[in-house]
Amino acid sequence: MPVILRWLLRLGPMNPIAQRLVQNGSRRTKHFYLRAAYLAALILVLLWSLLYSTMNAQGSLDYRTLAAAGASAFTWTAYLQVALIALLAPVFMAGAIAQEANPRNWDILLTTPLSAAEIVLGNLFGRLLFILALLLASLPLFAITQYFGGVPGRSIFASYAIASSAAIFVGSVAIALSVSRLVGRRAVFTFYIAVVTYLAITIGMDVWINAQRAQASVTWLTAINPFLCLRALLNPTTYARAPEGSQTGLASWFLESPVTTFCTISLLLSAVLMMASTITVRLGGLLQAGSESSGMPWYRKILGMPAKDAEHRAPRGVWTNPIAWREAAARNATMGRIVARWSFIGLGGLLGLSLIVMFHIGTLDASGFQLALITVVMGELGVIVLVAVNMSATAISREREDGTLDLLLTTPITPSQYLTGKLRGLVAYLLPMLAVPLGTLLLASIYTLVGGLGRDGGVTIVNTVLQNKVELPVVLPEGGFVAPLAVVPFVAFCLMVGLQFSLKSKGTLGSVVATFGAVGIAAGILGLCAWNAASDVPVAGPALAGLSPAAAIFAIVHPADMMLSTYNNSGGATARTALVVGCLLAAPAYAAFIYGIHASMVRNFDVTVRKLAGNK
Image (cartoon, rainbow, N blue to C red; front, side):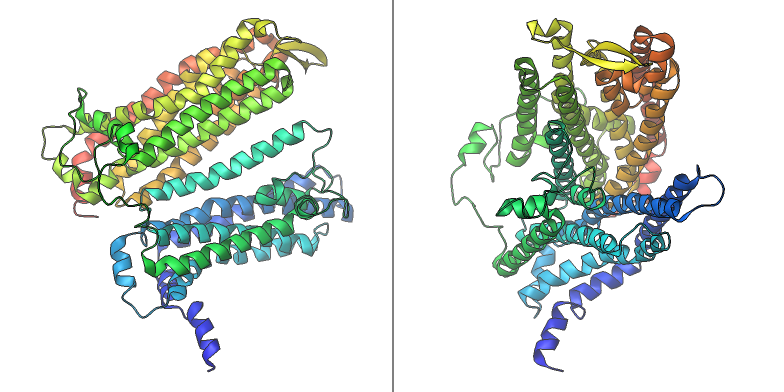
């Protein structure tokens, strides 16, 4: 065998690291169920789309109807595939951060005769194979749509190129973080949040930019977001690209060929990250960068933190429940956490205030203000829920892994005090962050309540109800006061679910994934039911909307659209009253769920802890 071919095979298929990852991962039952669930979701969406598109056809189906049904089914399935890849890629690549970032693993790995390129690419290919295998497994489903017509083969392969490029880039970022050795298991969720937040922010900014235009079209953000690229590919009429030859330079790449640009940028950045990782993998990564030889860094003094190796620190006041105090205070033990938390609070508060100022001076019209307000508030709440899930899902399993739980069980603290303290401490830590979106909504409500401080044009917007034009406030004046009743208990419920899985799971990674699935399913079902009920069910519908924070916030900003049936039958006053009542009932409803989970955890605490004793 030629030497160059042997070398190339060692970088890919014959790489021992890749082979180890593939063999171990192929034996895991969880991976099998995940692949089966992935294909099942695509099959169900494909069948549902085909049936829904043809259910209104009279008699036999003609070729035009079949082609339209095939195109619609392909569009829905393609969007779902990119969404699932965007969600699953960080999960599969999280192992690279959680396992290989461990210095002990690197101590063993670097003693082998493997070259730097073999170490880096073996980790990438071994973990990326599972994601690419999911894509290939779904190819027969997309091929089926060819029988109906209306789906060009080029579009199918272009959608696969978008999903593959996104997966490769996410994988390269995960490997780079692992090689840097600056992160550990606790960075897994930060990595996941960063991916989801980036996608949400770019989509929101694209929607806001197009809201200022007469017709939606490709923007500069399209080529850096896989969902926007897919929209430009599958919806060329409603999301048009710039005419060929109308732009020059970078604009021609970003506005005329967003799909090609996205794939090119993703692959180039992936290559750069892999090259940098290859250079630094045997140099200790970035672990030694910026280390202090002596003295205390200035930022630790400003933040009131002790020196890195200090044996003593100033005493602190402890709450009545020491677990609650420790859970809230320990989250701010490092500079990175302090900066991240207060940056979110400061920038989020400034952004919310800026929206109101821009609306007041006329930079944003009423519809633009509503869109920007919902985007910002829902985006911030989404980030907070993700943070809550991560913290709660690792709160107990992390202490089991590092042995802290064994020490706590030797104290007089009861299981009820321990679990209550965990929940209270996490809620206390998240309250300042929750104050950002809720405070933004409260300021908007107060601004509407006082009449916009004399704003030109007022603070109302015209909506059509039963073909009658009705003037409504841009934000319900009472909305900012009742929204916390729906949002804060929901976040506490997510925390309690995370604590339950953290108690039952062997490791942090398993508890995070399980909590994500449980919270996602519960929030999705509850939100879908509340959303449809708010619009279709008179009186009771707006009350049910209070059980879902997303539905409640949308009803506060778009009352006529969200509570249409009640507005048509009983009027706006009834709809708004029902929404307030629903938010008031949401708090005790979530409190009952939280109490039930807490009681179950306390009852089974000793059995569960003994069963999992020794797992690290």
